Length: 291
Image (tube, rainbow, N blue to C red; front, side, top):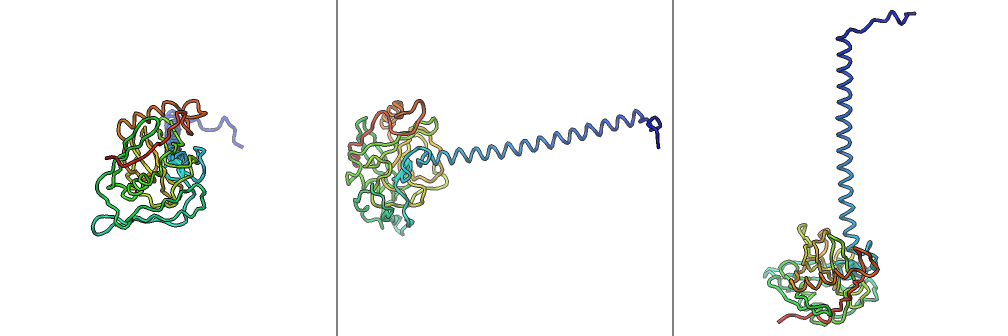
């Protein structure tokens, strides 16, 4: 057996080389750990971004907001909240003369909060040019809503038709959201339940570039496609949402001042930012075509 004191003693050069190899291994381990941390951080940030986006969408549709499941923030049944989804899918086609054919399908969900007012006339030749100014008279002040046919001809035609049928007269704006980057007032349900609307639904008119800055009028919908109805939301902050809710127009400055006042009043039962009925009730006395 070899005695310990007979083992060869390493030279200074060998010790330096061993130390260098040890240092190199430490540096390699540190580099690999740093790469893993960056990868993990990237995954975490991606997941958080997805959660924020989904959370905003759910909040808007009422899943997080506590509205009726049938309604959603930007829909007619909106959450803005709206009624239960329809079983059929509505479509929109473009005609040779530049008009579009809109399809307004019966809502067969069995929702008891729907009101039958017929459907917009001449849907097969819906104009895609020009704008329509609507005066939205409320007990908190007047708002002028400018509908843009070029971006949402079917929604503009439906909104105008419902206004002409006095569909909105006497209704309340049932939902206020006062998050810092998610401020909106939702209206358009004659029943005030968050699940009411007309007896028809139609397809969303959105693109991948659809956004919801302050001053936007957009239509509420359920989680199902082609579930837009009468409910709409008015944004008083830049709102982050997936491009699933039809932007139909914009609000004038006087109208934004009304929204700011209502928002400052806060939400019922909420200390700080909230989501629910506004402390300052808003009743829509009438929405009519201006001029």
